[in-house]
Amino acid sequence: MAEKNLDFDQVIDRRNTYSLKYDFARERNMPEDLLPLWVADMDFQVSSYIQEALIAQAKHGIFGYSDVKEEYFEAVKKWMKRHYDWDVERNWLIKTPGVVFALAMAVKAFTEKGDSVMIQQPVYYPFDLVITDNGRKVVSNTLVRDRDGRYGIDFADFEEKIIQEKVKLFFLCNPHNPVGRVWSREELERLGDICYKHHVIVVSDEIHADFVFKGKHQVFAGLKEEYKEIAVVATSPSKTFNIAGLQVSNIFAPNPKLRSQLRKQLDAFGYSQLNVMGLVAAKAAYENGEEWYQAMHQYVGENIAYTKQFLEEKLPEIKLTEPEGTYLLWLDFKAFNLSDSELEDLIIKKAKLWLDSGKIFGTAGKGFQRINVACPRCTLTEALVRLEAAVREIKK
Image 1 (tube, rainbow, N blue to C red):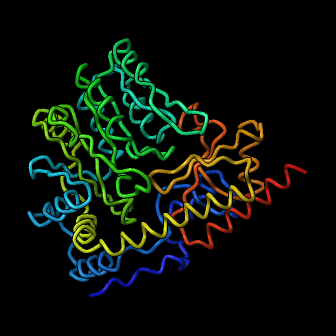
Image 2: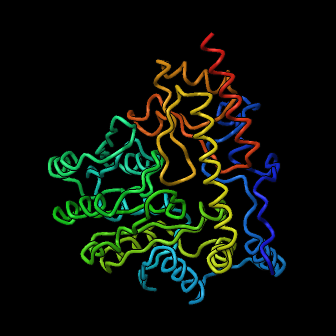
Image 3: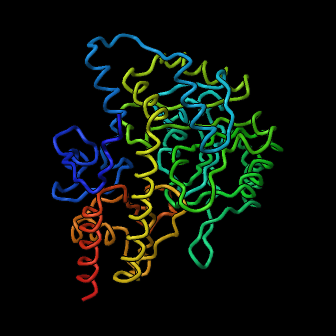
């Protein structure tokens, strides 16, 4: 069977399909005529290999309790080795319905009420929620920007806050969502050495690892042998293969003590087997999805380049943070000197777009918007043209 779903220009009507992105504007207090480029899924059909595997499973007609055998792990293992030269072991693997779920379980497993958990804002907003909603304290080693708008890490602040706040757990986001940094080996080792020195457990969210456009993705636990003692690596095919709704993630904990603590929390939560369709899709993706993945990766990269050129030529006031990874672009609107409400008015009422407001990623995100460019080029063009018209209106 040859890959059939390689037409990424095709517009798929997602309305009335229970799509969070397209069908829940009213429930989220948004106008229903907005063009949505917010939530991080793609507007592309999945690999035909995934489709065929799901159809075959559906035709069987029985959906009882299910699990996977060695061939599932082998598919995941080969993907990790081929793409990141990372050798994983079978007993490291813990399957969860999602990375955010795994983060919440890590908070419960590795900290107590009132303990401090470090994040690096502006960062994916569920990081904050799974910490505070579980009665822990958020400590932010806020990222710093240089004159060119590139984000970096304040390492002195990182270590100082670990000591002062008695940080027990650190959520690393690599590639970083939303600022698009792909952390270098040097940066990760500086973080890792500090965490190892102070016995801080690192949960590394690497869900966007397959979307690197500049630099090279480094698996945190694979950088140094000692990092295996403190690291839990969260991976998933959900972003890569557009199967987030099937809820399957692969979490790797090399340290048996940490692995036992995490499994204990899953048991306490009452969660055991994953959705069989998610398992089937993940296996098909990792075994046969390479052609689709490579074509999609190229298309998204071209969308990023297209967006960059459009902004430079027609909307130079909007500064695009140079994207190194993810398909989520971080746009700086601060040149317009708009208040939060004025910026929302520009995006929602004038441009009629549904993006992610930067302020939900922390105070450091104010004045920014996050846009998802994993969509057909015509959809992206329409969004950028709407934005151009809206900016022209406020400049009159």
